[in-house]
Image (cartoon, rainbow, N blue to C red):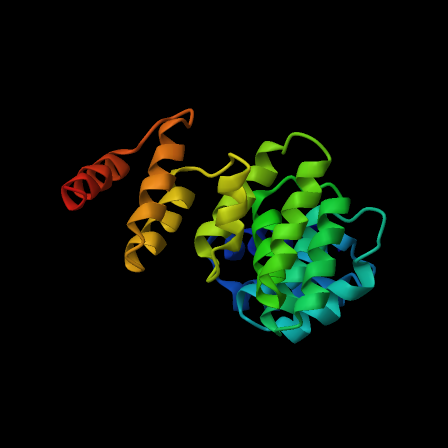
Length: 220
């Protein structure tokens, strides 16, 4: 029996590598049929195959019984959050991402997805979450990376503005704010953003320097 399970598991790994999600699902269901007491890792991989096929409801059914299992990895609740998000159950998604962080997630993706969900519920909630992390001390690199990723993807500007105000906005985040100011023809805001960016650790980017030159033309 073990040899058969090992062979199926090897096929599962190949299917996952080839992004053959439906094939991986079928193999995993066969594995579980042969070994109903499969460990959490097997169910977790099955949920991943379902998630990648967009079968969010089935993914939830697989993951929910394991969300508090002592041997789970932080990815399990992260995937649970993704499944809730796919079903537009945003409060539940936020709670699952928070569980993933409590489980030890140090992935920027968990931070990014959580902030995207909070912003979709209410932009101020994403800003409040960032402020909560900042209040605990220096932001960890994965938190900062995830927040910056979220800021440039969100429809609202509030998270970008919060990062800029706290001196944590990187070049893509600053560009987001500058483009918004340009689109609204707010030259004063553009100038203020560039002036503040000039004092950043990396200084002005080439794009910002070109924008500064253009603004100089308009101001003459």
